[in-house]
Length: 209
Image 1 (cartoon, rainbow, N blue to C red):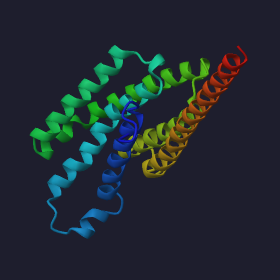
Image 2 (image 1 turned 180 degrees about the vertical axis):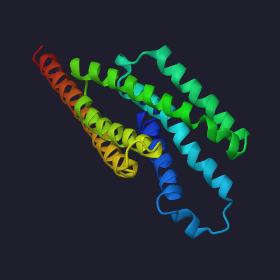
Image 3 (image 1 turned 180 degrees about the horizontal axis):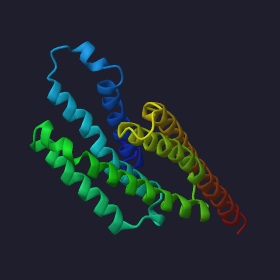
């Protein structure tokens, strides 16, 4: 993003990676607490929830930047602003209060996934660049998150698969961004070659005249 600030999709993708990393450190086998045994537990819970609460709006921002022609601006803003409001509650109140908003955030996450599914359906229909790669990663993370929410609410007894889903999603998005970067480079090469060809033809015309 810092090398090419006009395109903000790598910025939001990078933030998604950071959020996923922080959440994994705090939830997967308590790795963070093994490194820092005296780290305040309530603060750790807040950071864990924060990574979850900010995940949906950051994902929406990333999705809107990848497929800007297919977004529904007002719906995206509503979902993001509700997430921001819940995040403020998370930051302002202790665990026993903000943990009650988790169910609302899960609903927002489901709506975000449905919105993303609609956008990706449009992007595939109109053959947008990278639509199939994005959809592959999205389906994996959608299945993983749905499984985890059902497991957390004791509806099914499968286990948590979000870390694996996030890994495959991040891999698919890195591949997508690589394709976009490569295509942009090829376009620059083609424009340069066309320009050089036109300059050469024009020079020959001037010499002959």
